Length: 391
Image (cartoon, rainbow, N blue to C red; front, side, top):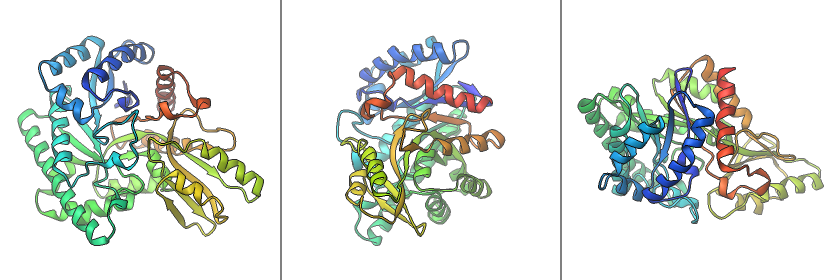
């Protein structure tokens, strides 16, 4: 739905179903119910997530035409897509494989170009369209700086090939499409400063394309959860991006876990035991712990942080576990909901993108105490954002 000249939606990676038929079946069952409650009179956008398999199947037979007809019938449109998870994302162990195949591979390049071919077909006239993607690769897969340097160079070459493809699409159709790179803890690009450094000193310095073309088609996906985990200063990062002419293609509106760690032993144990309820085997739940001296310790998963729970120098943990954005206080632990409010308040006063997507994909693995029926949860999240943007 359109709010203050921006399009607000949710990401369909919350739904199960890796084949196109399975994913479309869930969409047809769920989306009309959501739209009736959230945007009954006006069109409502969808943030579409397609696995590699689904992207191939959607282009077979007449599936794409059927989807376009359905979008028109229900009063919907697709303006943003999630191209980060390539393979299975539910009912399987994902963990670090969410980055595979990475941007050093032809598989990732081909998948992303296929998604853009689909988006170019279904994007309404007069809108720009974006696809979010992984932060090049995963740091822990490489043992030396040299290996990471080579991988970064290869990944950047493939990113530039996408930019070239998007330049061609614009020339042929007039539609402006952009690849939105999503920093994440332990990704090659895991913070605002790392993304900006790569963008300015690697991507723009490649000489492969004119800088104006790169800046039009390669953007940042600002996942609030990921930036909050790193204790990053949102306003300062957004201002720096603006000053350097680097666009934010999409805000992914998501909340992480956070918890202050009391000095008292019994209270500290209680907090850590509560966090342990979120240690589940499907997704990566990176933790960044703030120390007494304000330095940060990075753990690749929640289980690693729990193994170091006796570290008395840690004063706060933030964990990569997307929790419903309408919940801030969960008793002795909290969410980073205040970070979302800070980003959206800034956006209200100085808009810096027109793509807004709620991304809480963890519904199936949430502790029972946080589970609201799926459709109700999606409605509550979007309504919560809508209330902030319209207040």
